[in-house]
Image (cartoon, rainbow over the protein chains, first blue to last red):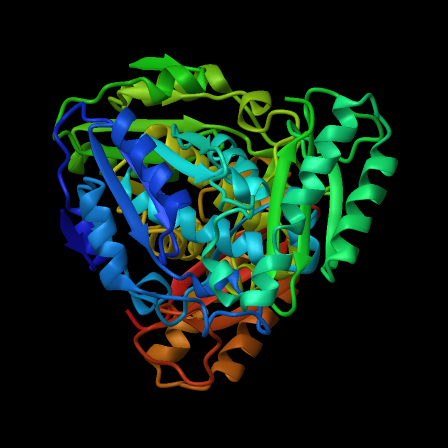
Length: 277
Length: 277
């Protein structure tokens, strides 16, 4: 595995002609969710590139940029074990040099759901991912389904900007109690960690309600909210949307997906699930 | 010359390996300014691609999208004469399909000068040019210096987004009386056409003042304004900026460039010149 820190050096990499390049952009502190993306890229592609970059542009001023967990040695060792070809680790000063001014935004979709409580978050995500795509030149990019809105927005960006890139999603990887794997789970103390599976419980309960014949989105959301509140979670949003356009639905069908964001103490967690699968 | 109207067909073009691809994005109704860019691309590059696309996204609601001059047959004949390899003529419906949502902006620079009286103009320009770049995959892109702010912003966009693209400018091509060649000159009636060279006269006069030792930007601007007003031009802006950052300057040096925008009747014209050259 080649570790590359310089943008010009990454730009200069000459892949074998006709090689399919798979790319997994990450913020590091890798868990099994990330590694499932790496394995998918390894399975599908000839060359696998993983970036690790904690992107300042996607954090709000009161968010956790400084405390975001980092463990580069462990990350690199994991990437090597998973047969990655290139680990790309750019510096923030090189990604956003003084006078940096160019921003990419997917309008509308970026204001919904997580975008409502995290203004400019998706603008920061789109911008850094477009930059990384322009540096890495992948044919396929792999995203975790946990960040469903992020996956949706980046797929839309790639389509709108004619990037000629397949944006693929992989299923959420969960802990034994159902908590979706996330680097931010490391913030949870032991009591919060126990409460944190309530997002999954609320999603499972919603799916069971649908299986039992409930079609009314409002009723399902109310039941999910009760589960979150009884676990001392502070709800940011619980919404049921159409997976194909992220628009809220009143009545459940095959495309209906529940998305949840909630604070467990200070940490803010997200999760989602198709309700009829 | 191959004429391509479909985006997938342009994306599928396989250039010879190692061929340098030069690109000239235009809105058509070609004049000698455009053709000088084509000739520069032909001189420097192995493959020359010219796009013709009147980009709705860069026109304001009260601007001249509908009346913008078009003559595709003449344009294609000129491009063929100038040895272009590919003429790319996408449809607006393919460039901006229903639900299109992704926009690129160079913040700050897009609000100055022409951006002040044309809000969203440069956002439309950046977005379409990024899309065209992603479809055409050029190594070099050629821009006319008449649209100096546009050239500056697109070069900044390419740099910020790591496009690995050289953005080059070519000198303004002028009519005999000094009027900068522009597709919009076709809007001028015969009286307006005579008045229209006042932008050039104001620039020349400014350069002469500098040559004679004047260094005070305010005095030079006042003299330029007097020339415009005496020709019945309505000034949008007259500014002297540093060519390397587009910031206004008080005192003239080698980088000082005067930029003018003014209405001659209804048509709005722009022009610019380095003052110490």
